[in-house]
Length: 591
Image (tube, rainbow, N blue to C red; front, side):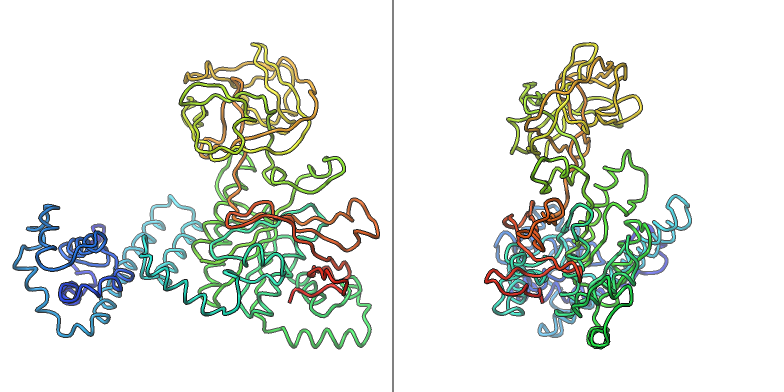
């Protein structure tokens, strides 16, 4: 029942259909597993019917036969038997069932009335958001659109789904792709599909690289394959390039025409004919481009929902992550990027599609000696601590070197609650090594010493500051003791270079900080992506005949499978990637 709306007008419902569904289950309990996947208890309007249906579901889960007596016993155990009307009401349910063969019709009527009621409730919330002024207009619009589309796409099952139902859906998907081992959207790149099994629904995929590596071209090649070869809808948010430049890149890749010559208008008549043929052949491909500048997460989500509702959607691509805005206020850009990443992951799950976001890397790979291949730490944009840095465990008070914690998760450390400025226990989701880096020794006037990389951040009176932004005399926030709640300010006494060694970091969700060597330091922001891959071309740093045109896709994180490196060919003229032919032939198109 919806208490927030006037009760003088009855909300949509069908008492007869609700009674018929419950009566049908009593007559033939075998129908309940099929109904349970479509009807939730809250789909029933009358409280007594909701209680009865929940009792039947409980009996089914307990593998107890459903009949008049077992339902009565269950309700009596829950002290709800009189609430539903007693034995007289239970015994009369099957009298309202004209035909058990039509129970599916009664289920649909109950569900339809339930959706109508939720639509009324949603409309009421939209009105309240617009009237009270406490919600920004664009945010209110985004919430409204999400709520309405959510009702429109309502899958009857919500919450827990029976394993039998999941098995049924999985078999249907397998039957739709005979002979294929892919569980997701094919990328067209053979070795990538072998490792990833395609781009899977609900997954956030990050493709990152330094400028000039070709990450936009790589993502476009995947989008081309999905839209042109698979004929499935792709949405592209191009935050950096205009829609015409993207179209030219796709055209050059498809027609095998030099991008620079086409843009300059220096193409032969034969090539021009090929261009026209490519446009005619692929112009109706379901690929849609939005080149709005600096869209917010809310705007991206709103447009993606609309595209899925109107055209269906198989893949969403965003180029690139750092140009987006999360909306709202954030302590720093790193936390805002983390919020965007988390929002895109939620969007992928909501729309049940893979979302591919491109990301720019810092200059860290250039500073890494002779091997400039990116690492996960380059994506997090966070600093690191030397392996001998002692972290205080909240449950025991023991100080453990961070290097010994690498690979562990789920343990508690002390962290500063940003709201109360008191120390609290916080759980670490990940402890990990981030490679070899230059470290510096920070010493405070009270003798606290900590060794960290130049970009690791410390809490100061002015907020979080990188180590290389601190100077002698600068105040940093430190705890009064390992397990005490008070904090105070100490002063930087010295900062000195202290060699190169393997370094480590922790991820502490929520607090985003932890106590190390009696100093409060920032944590690493966990990447929400299910798959993180880096585009790397060694010829950018070390040009030679041996590596000319070769590229690597380094899969550094993969929640659902293996990691590894995929070798590819990069064709600079057409700004496109191809599968590597290991038999010495020309590069094979990923189509």
